[in-house]
Structures are given as structure tokens and as C-alpha cells.
Image 1 (cartoon, rainbow, N blue to C red):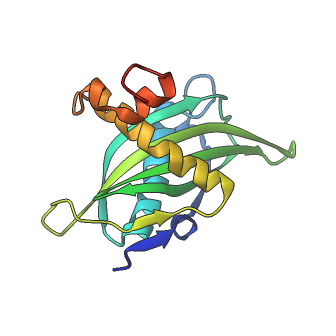
Image 2: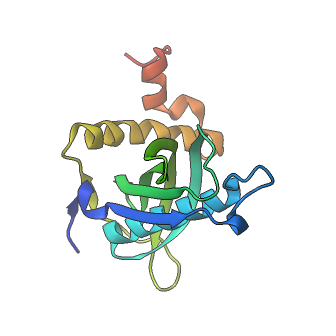
Length: 175
């Protein structure tokens, strides 16, 4: 397995149409249905990067900016932003399109984390991510802060050990 892979190699695009069974009483896409689609498209990107079976470790920073209406075509774009040993952070962006009105809008963004596992379900090492574009580099740089925040919030890391978080808040002990 290669030790490094370009971020773009994991790029995944998934397209869905919002049907009546996918909507709430306001005829908008249900949040749970969207989260299912986010999980699927992100898992595919993580599998492409790792060439392994992956499991969802966390779903965070899901921003519900705009509702998605019945009949809209939804395009979900995902890509691995950074890898840490066996885990990978995946960024997902959602675009809703009202085709008859010729209108597209970015409706949601999210970060999910996946862990690559072997056939016995044990975590396994994944290739490093090589970012190339300015956006890929920005996501790559921010991934360590987001990871530390996830670990602090889940009480798997002590706040005082989150060096990257301290540095953005100019907290004592971060020179």
C-alpha cells in the first residue's frame, strides 16, 4: 500500500433526488436522510483513500444552512482532508439544485471521521494525505485542530494537551 496519496484521489460525488418519502411535513429533506447520504458519500471517499473497510467514528460540524426542497437534485461532494494513523477526516459539501428554476445553492458542509479496519474489525494504518490546492491545504491544516477538539469534547484528550487549540486562542503556555 502506498505511504502517501493525493487528497484528490479520494474525491467522490454522489447525486440524489429528494422524493416525497425523503421529506418532512414542510416538504423539505429530512435531516436524518441527509445525514445518511453524508455518511455514505464520506465512507466512499475514506474507502478510496485507505483501500480498506471503514467505520464511522464521528460526525461533526454539520451545518444546516438552507432547507432542501422536494424535487431538488442534491449533489454531495466528499474528499479526505487528512489521515492520522488509522483514522481519516472527510469533508463533505452539499449543493441543492432546483433544475426547473436553474438555481443552485450550497446548503450544508460537514466533517466526518472514519477508521480503517482489517477483516477482524481492528484499526489498520492508512496512507498519509498530500494536499495540493489552496482549499485542500486549508482543510489539511485545520484538521489537526478539529481532531483535537473532537478528542477534548469526547474526553479522550485533556484540554491542556490540545496544543493546536491553545495556539489559536493564544492561551498561556503556547509560545
